[in-house]
Each structure stands twice: as C-alpha cells, then as structure tokens.
Image (cartoon, rainbow, N blue to C red):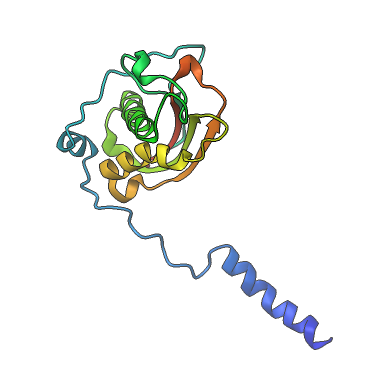
Amino acid sequence: MAASSRARYILFPILLALAQGAGAAPPKAIDAPNHDPEARLAELGIELPASSPPVANYVPAVRVGNLVFLSGMGPCGEMDAQRLGKLGAERSVEDGYRAARRTAVCLLAALKAEVGDLKKVRRIVRVFGMVNATPEFTQHPQVINGASDLLVAVFGERGRHARAAVGMASLPFGIPVEIEMLVELEP
C-alpha cells in the first residue's frame, strides 16, 4: 500500500471525528440562569402591547419542539402616514431603525402570548428583516439593527442571533419593515 493511501486511512477517521464534534469543547453557557427579560424590558421603559391579531389567514406563532417560529410582523400600534413609506424616499434610516425596534417589541409580545414567560427563551436564533426600500437604498442592515439592538439589550448574549436584512419593493399596507423571528426555548 502506498504511503499516500495509508495516510488517507489514518487521517480520514480523525477528520471525520473532528467534523462530528469529537473532542470539541462543550458549548459555553449563553448567560446567567437568572436572566429576566421582562424585568429588563421594564428597565428600558418598554411595556409589551397586547398581541395583535393576524391581518390574514395565518397564526402569529407556531411551536415545533422547543422552537417558536414567529410570523412576519410590522410595527404594531397605530400606523399613521408619518410612520409609513419607503426607506430612501419618504422615510430615513433613523425612521426605519425606530420601526424595526418597535417591530421587535411586537414580536416579543407575540412570543410572550405564545410561551407565557420570556424567561423560557434560551436563544434568539434568527431574525429575518425585510425593508420597504427604493432600489438605490443600501442601508438595510442599519435599519434592522433597531430590532437586533433591542433583542441584545433585553436578552444579553441570548439575544445575539443569525440575521438577514433585505430590501423589498413593497410591504403590506406600506409598512417600512417586516420582521420574522425564530426562537429556541429552554427544554
């Protein structure tokens, strides 16, 4: 047997074990077990609104095992003409940031309605942010930071998440942002 063939037979099991996580350090704790997101919301002066009913034929949240999939939502509350419109045209990046932050509050209200207590959140896994924007607009990440910054402020390391921030030609009712969220609950 050639030396290169022997090396393959020796290296393959080692590489396979590494790929499967053998010898990997256990995952570090994300945060202290006594975290209290609802107390943190109160410290930030944020009161969760009542969860809004869906505007079409869907449900706000679906649980699959210890995952909660939250439907796309826009900013809750009264949406007057001053809060609607496209980023890069009628709305500024700052307007979009505020709308994304308000949308995160609405997502947390829907999450609380689904799970009962935000202490059950193990991790915010993913945020998918859609920005109603002109074709020339390129600051989608800065807009969706409004949601991401709030989630980290409320959940600490548990709030850090994977994310997409994309532009859309339009969003329902002219809202400036729509955000979906995936959350992992404690087992």
